[in-house]
Length: 409
Image 1 (cartoon, helix red, strand yellow):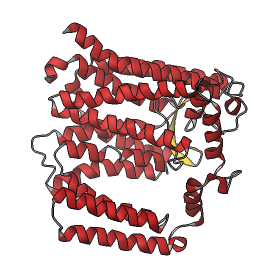
Image 2 (cartoon, rainbow, N blue to C red; image 1 turned 60 degrees about the vertical axis):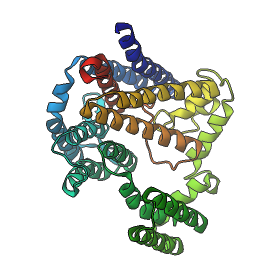
Image 3 (spheres, helix red, strand yellow; image 1 turned 90 degrees about the horizontal axis):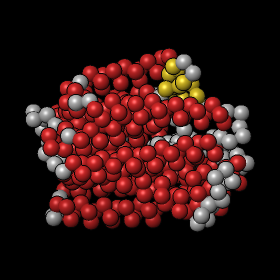
Image 4 (cartoon, rainbow, N blue to C red; image 1 turned 90 degrees about the vertical axis):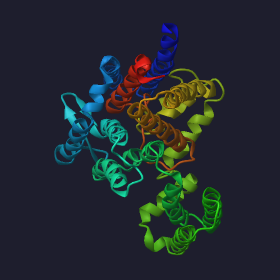
């Protein structure tokens, strides 16, 4: 049993360590020969050490302490977001950072983890009935309050990731997915109207088939919801120019065709594709990437850091990075199915969905299948707040693995 526990532990530790090492290499390469190269790398290294300490603390702490103080920690996180809006430091148009000595800290990254813990505590309570409209409203408010404060910074990317774990957690808690689809369908139809009529028609047909299949009958509310969404989508498609502002229309156009403005809004997306494609199977070698070393992508050590990995380490290096993420996420999914403790399984499911969302959006926007919204790649992108927060959550997951007998798996 002891040998099996160590194996279970390593499934979490090894992928995280591999990602951190690849992240430090990428940050060093992306900032090589710049005025800030040394300071940025050593800051990230310092955050990695701090994250290792934080992960160790969460590995050895009694998980019940985290559960018992979940609401208090959540309240502290919300207060910190308010403090950021009042006293925060503005960087790249966003008031998202608080200065602590020589370091800048982004509370919103930590608040995502805190919200997951608070939601897990609420949903695991025996008195909570997720099918009850009041309890459902409470859990939604628990997410929407910090998400709204992040939106005011403004930070659209972080706001969207704050919402990513709602559906997996409430469905795991017993909420029927059919009603989620009823809420999603009109929104999907509305936004599909921004693109073209073919997409709108396709989503309409698919939505109706899915809804009818799940309920196995043709219900009035299915017609009502889909019809209302279709009407909204048609109006949006017809009057897009009057609904959206010029810069919003530009973002949609660039997402669909970056070559429409290759020297402006589409520049980063195009250069990212060039960097990834030029890496080939084996890459150009560490510190040898043309796009990377010649700084064709501005601030490539943050949201576009996957380009550095792909160009210098090639397809095989990128595949290794994705395998590390896959191993980490799949191990957590396995734990959700194996653990018998309600609080723990909900918390791990929330973090796994958040991690997956970050990976899909970040890599998706670098290869051109997702719009550029400013989401970091966990453990890889430069940024201490994200690194420490993610390491803390993995440390907590390893804690659950260490206490497997107590948790019933």
